[in-house]
Length: 507
Figure: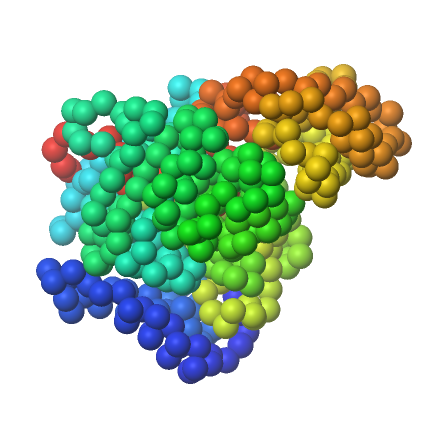
């Protein structure tokens, strides 16, 4: 992953400081400088940016080699000393760390005791569907970074902190009081301040609603509550758009945030057109916390105060700008269980050169999905899937009016089935347009396509609660190296703090 070779525009920095000043700290945090430092870091000269990353890495490596049995043994086995990993460019000398290795070495990845001043916060798990997630201990410091970095994202998105923020999520991911049941369908979770960042800042209200409510109920709720900002799964945003037949789901919404699931270009176009509002994204992992935030120019900028990111080839070496590679993350703030070169299994495009947004934080491009899912697909599959998505996006409103959901499935013999969740029969011209697009994209392969109309409720989320608009029998079962998490996250960052299992006592 390349940094940006550019000068720093003092005007950009001054503008960002003015935006940050609009966020009013609560009285008990008056004088806290963490957030001002984040702003300054975003516009450091590239050389200073790289030097800060290298210094943070050296501190982590020295600690891990001395205190973490797994890394102590790894360095010895490879004949390395901490001084051999003195810069981010040296990281390829170390192997990648995947979920299976974390599970095998769960005890050896922990220190005998935490450093002075550090406290254990809790246990986080990768959001899998297999019953074998990786369990990661986090410190209070690591957990605290979530709220701090979440505010950076909201600031970049230009959210007004005094506006109302709504989340539509699984009930298990909405807050509830200790010992209380999950939020029932039809009910609203209400908080006086935004979740997480409201711990530090004066904000407007935060609202939560179950994604398991019917889409019509979600629209009615949005129109009744009139939030300014909406965060929910990428697929849910698309379902809201389909359910309104192209009309705005809620006129009050000024921006949306797509979380947890991959957001394809066609989905982004549909959502932004229907809501008449931009879609924003973060990238985060339960195992790490918030990793990056996507700027308006379309680049994910890494939170280098919290982690380092590489985009690598199968050998673990950096790929050049413009090439695809796996996202590998090194966590900087979690002394309880430091993860160095953690293989997320997510694919992204490496980028180089300055970002048009003016920020100098290193970055990467579009997130393309899970490597372990895409790698097993026959050649031409993604082009065929993309053709269907584009045809659906460009479908005239009068033809698509009954459509509420869709799901394309590929079986082992490469027969495809497009299941259309509809509230009334579709016109024949609808299928005709799909078949024309399919013939152009998949005709050379001879892959047949069946089109089936079903009730919307027949299209259900997968075991992890996430809806996939494309599934394939060529993809490995989650236990075969994929924990079932889409990882794009594009997450609000809500993958982590607030969803932890509190540890009993501390080290």
